[in-house]
Image (cartoon, rainbow, N blue to C red; front, side, top):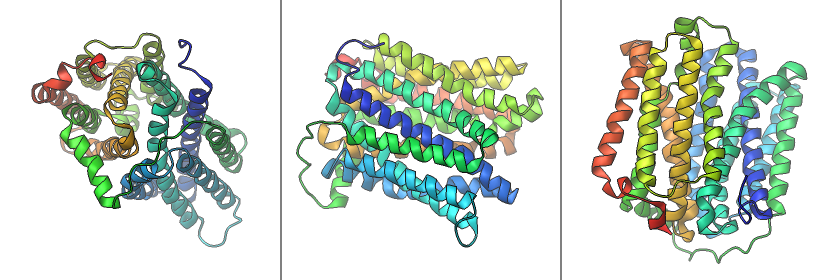
Length: 405
C-alpha cells in the first residue's frame, strides 16, 4: 500500500495508537448511548451525553496543545489512553451495578473525563506524526492515517452494537478498555528522538502564540475555516433518523447504512490518496472537494429513494475524504514543529465545534424550513462558503503542496 520508508515501524505503532483509540472511543460512545437510553427512555438524556463530553473537551483543548508542545508528545497520548481505559472500566462497573448511588451520575462523570482524554489524543498524534516521517511522505501518510481513523469511525459503532447484542454492555465496555490498553502499549513502545521542549513561556502567552500563527496564516486559517463551515452548514447526519422515518420509510437498519455510507467513501478515498497523493493544485482540489460535498448534500435531500440517498452520502464521504487529507497535509506541512500541539488543538476546536453546532443548526433549520428544504439550504450555504473562501484566500486557491516543502 505504501512505498518503502512510509509504513515504518514507528509510523505503524503511531497508526495503531490512533486507530485503536478511535475504535475504543466509538465503541464506548455507542454503548453509552444504549446504556443511558435503557436507563432513562429519555432523548434529552442522550443529548446530555454529548454536552457532558464537549464542554470539558473545549475547556481543555488549548491547554492540551500547550502541554504536548512543552512537555512530551508521547506521554500525554499514553496517559490519555490510560484515562480512556479507566473510564471504560468505570462504565463496566456501573453497568454491573457495582458502584454506589445513581449510575447516571457515574456515566456522565465518566463521559466528562472522556472529553478531557480526547483533548490530548489529536495533538499527541499530530506532533508525533511529524517526528516519525520525512516531510515528503506527509501527503501519502495523511491518506493512510485518514483511512485508519475512518475505519475506526465505521467499525466502532458496528462493533459496539454487535457486542451489546451478543454479549452485553459489560463485555462491550471491557473490550473498549482492552483496545485502549493496546493503544497505550503501542505508543509506549514507540522509540523516537523527541526535540527539546519549546522554550518555557507563560501558558496563556504560549496559547496566544498558537492562535496568532493560525489567524495570521491565510492558508491554514482558510483550510480550517472551510472545513468548519462546510460541516456546520452542510452536514445532515443529525437529521438521518428523520429522513429514515419521514422520507425513505425504511427500517432501523437503514440508519446504520446511512451513517456508515460517508465513512465508507472516506476510507476508499484515503486508501486511493495514499497511493496517488495530490501535489499540484492542492488548494483547488480542496475547494472543489468541499463544493462537491455541498452538492452531494443537496442531491441527498432530493433523492427519490433510500439507496440513491445512500449513494449520495457515500459520494459526500469521498469528497470529505479528499478535504480531510488535503487539510491535514496542509496543516502538517505549514506548522512549525514547536507549534504542532497547539495548532492541532485549535484545529480540533474548529472541527469539534462544527460537528456539535452543525447538529444544532440542522435541527433549528429543519424546524423553521422543513426537513428537506433545510438540507438543501445547508448545501447551498456550503457552496457560498467555498466561493467566498476562493475569493478571500487566493493563497489557498493557488496552493500546491510543493510550495510548502
